[in-house]
Length: 254
Length: 352
Image (cartoon, rainbow over all chains, first blue to last red; front, side, top):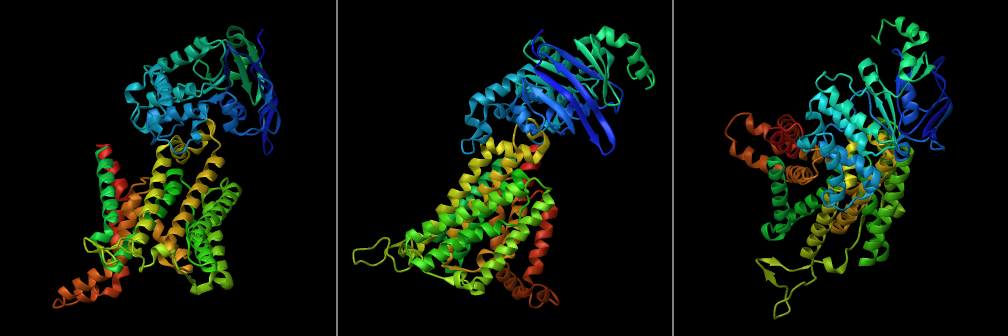
């Protein structure tokens, strides 16, 4: 088995007396797409926030290729190859689609510190950004402000932004949330493509069972902040423990 | 896009007027107005970099302006007229501005915007009090008068005719006063141009990204605090250089001309009138407000005279009520141009 690219060791966070995530130890490997499931309030997004740097854990560690990320600011983690898309669309609304993507590209190349040459002269940056726009079929709306896009395209832009960061670890938090059935497949197609690149590690928080079935190589289940199941999709979904958890929560996995 | 073009053409036309100002307006007061417009364009542009592009609200911009002005004033006063004291004053003002901006930035740009604004307000108050109290060094409340480099003396002859007298070109005397005006014009234009370059660079996009969505900018790999501090330093140094230019032009520096909160209010008004986050709006905002401050009173005097026979109206138009009218004009402007003159023109057309 390949070395884990990302690991959490006893990852714990408490808010006052409430333990939101409790001693979660887990390894993630390149070429593997892991879906994180669990009822609302199970701590999935909180777990994500500690990996991508929005929250600092109370205890435990986040390691990426052996580097301790636990207390790093989010910007440094991004430069270490941890990329995260958000549950709610989280873009730069008044900037154009192209500018949104170029920001992610120039964060990679370090050109964000160049302050005197007009942006138009950085043709390499624009060319790279345009490749991501073509890959996500957003090239036709490249010059519209992000806020002018329909919701489905904004979700696609969110994925394109993540791809443009060229991370090793892709983290998606309900990438198809609020999308119509016609548009969701586009985004899932993109994620499937990322998954085909065997050097990438993909983490996905998802509720929709058809999505989970289609993409998951592995499922982990969080419940009350604890990791209660981990394994191949078939075996995890059939396990009695998981059924009990979900049946107590109005059949969200139905 | 058409709106942006209109705004750019209007701003360039204003720059062209400023370029030929000594030939178009030969009255001393008019040249005074033109020079003040130039300096304030640079000052307002550097403030727009903060408030409009990065979303940083600072009330310390006059303080940085004052550092540059006092740097030049003290050096010119102590060392006598010359270019060395001007350069020394510019550099020391800019260094002090950069160090203090970096210090304030690193210490407090992490906190919420409102606290940051309060901290800058406190720093600016301290600077104002210090300048007034350290009278041995700064001239206190009275400020300092000093002489500018010899090139700028009215008696200096730039061009002479066959008899060795100052040459007149198109009725303008080629003397030191003209050189002083072009010093102000070129320096301000360069500072404005530098601001334009910055907002058009990759860094400029990062600044806008921070304004739009700070958390996401951090999330894709930008150290927001570092970028904010850097831009705060750049704006502070620019303001300081504009201060030096103004001090050389006025040959007088005091709390009133370089540090008072009135200047801060003027900058805020100009940036709002021109349009926050438009950069070109700085040209329009600075021109509009300076013109209003200098000429509204004259205009009202004429208007009051013209309506002398009408009851009540001349009372309302009496020149001493000019601030009231300035206020009314400002309210109307904000009502009809909610995003400032440049901002509204650019935004409206682009939405169509």
